[in-house]
Length: 99
Image (cartoon, rainbow, N blue to C red):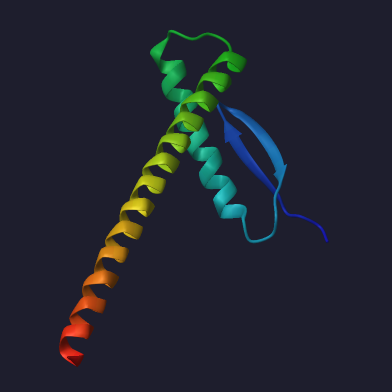
């Protein structure tokens, strides 16, 4: 089964990338996000060289992803605790009603 080829532009360079069918829009969105991150780094003027800009962008994006993952895990834990408290309260309420 052939995978569609999507052309994306990052810092003025075109890249042809194979991606699973139905995921073309996701790939384009990811490329646009990366392009914006790299443009911001380049515009700062502090980093020179495409490779260094790409590595710094990758580090920034990875940091954001890991931070969001930790935040999501924390929220999941809070939801489990609240669900447990709610279940206990409902169980207690049901026992009172049945007495």
